[in-house]
Amino acid sequence: MNRTQVTRWLVSEKALPYWLIFPTLAYVAAFFLVPLARTLLLAFRTDDGQWTMRFFVRMVEDVRFFDAFKFTLILVAIVVPLQLVTALSIALLVNTRFRGSRSFLYICAIPLGISDLAAGLIWFSLFTEHGYINSFLYTLGLIDKPIYFLSMQNLGWVVGSIVLAEHWRATAIVLVILVAGLQMISRDYLEAAEVFGARPWQKLWHVTLPLLKPSLQSALIIRTILALQTFAVAVALGGRLVPVLAGEAYYWYYLYRNANVASAYALLLMVISLLLAWGYLRFLRPREVRS
Amino acid sequence: MTFPRLQRRILLYMAVVAIVLWVLVPLVLIALAAFTPRSELYRWPKRIIPSTFSSATMSFFLHSYGVVSSLCNSVVVALLTLGMTLVVGAPAGYAVARYVFRGREAFRLGILMTRMFPTSLLAIPLIVTFIRWGLYDTLIGVAFVHTAMALPFAVLITSGIFSGVPKELEEAAMTLGCSRLGAFVRVALPLALPGLAAAAMFTFVISWNEVFAASILTVRNRTLPAQVLASLEAAPLDFRFAGAFFMIIPALIFMALARRYLFQMWGGAIAER
Image (cartoon, rainbow over all chains, first blue to last red; front, top):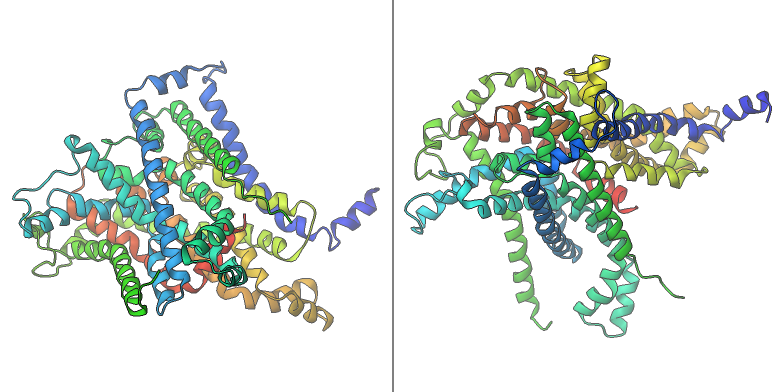
């Protein structure tokens, strides 16, 4: 192509979509790819340009590292399956199109707009020593002095309260994905199954769930990645009693002004996210339809 | 199952009521806490419904150090984010909705891939860059990061909205003498406007709720969540409860206003991977 041809192409209707996506591409490159490269440099290179593993060694040797790693994975392992089951149940309930199902769906979606910090504080008001749960148990006569749910001695309860808060706040995103997925399933399949005499649970197991697999997969990946980043909920409920990886990345910069070790944490989170997402894609691949 | 119809209905509605309570009770409780007099917040046992309602707790929060200025900062950052996200992202959404072009699927996939990035990975390296560029501790700096976080959503959501506007209407306008741009401005844009407004509200909420990047990239010019997080360790109960209630109000209002678009946007945009 010579220059006039290029110019003509650039102003033609064919080039228009490329002009339209260009700002987004440029922005994504500037704010995703450049930070990724810079994180690698921060994590693997000292200020005077020496390549080093020092920051990773410091990260791993930190007293909180192992706990942060452990608690992050525990939270993901408990919260994500729990949310998937809850969201699926609610989505199937909505899908029966009972009277009022639309309003029910909107109410269930409310937490979508609530931040992790606010959700953490809301559940703090329930679990704190003079909080609603303790007061309620006292009124019922079950306890006579408050239980210190959010203390060093009750780490199990701290984790439990984080799980509840996360479950309360973030199940809505899974629900939204699954409801959209269910709406895309044609009623014909279910009617066909009925013609062949399938019982309700057979329809669910052999028709609905297999067809919902792509949505389930999206929901799992998105929720797992977000759950790995659990941060403000944990801080609001337990301070640093239950350290998490994203929280450590925050504290290493916020308290110690060490962007290098913070970057090492960020990279670790990214690697875990990619590994888990790859795992889901690999092992939950939708079964191919044979014609 | 062989339950009689009535019994099944009762079971269904019992489940529905239980789930609705699970979602709403914590919200009601935090609203009660935010209007409980300060003295009653610390009393044991605490009354679930306070003896009187008082605005003292809320006013204590609003008069706490840095809250009003951080509130203004949050609004400014959210508006900047909203503006930048729509200006950058909506054209791409339109392109994906209207044109079949080479690389379209790769583009969509690339946009979705950005979700793999932890917020910490975006925010931490930007500290160094922002210090160098003089953007550290500025509102526009935070808005840049929030835009990066909201952009993938905005592209997918606006593409969903523009897909809902029939292409034929724009083509008809063009045969009647409108230019390409004129057809977009006079036909597609007005029809897409309510959806775009809903997308704008969600972008606002994403920025309003974000705490990690805002905390890392500011020192004095904090947004509201960053201010609350920074004062959390020393904060009394009334500050925490009123702060939580205050932070969720705009989100709740926007969700209520935009609820019609909720599932069309989030669901559709995310499910079509």
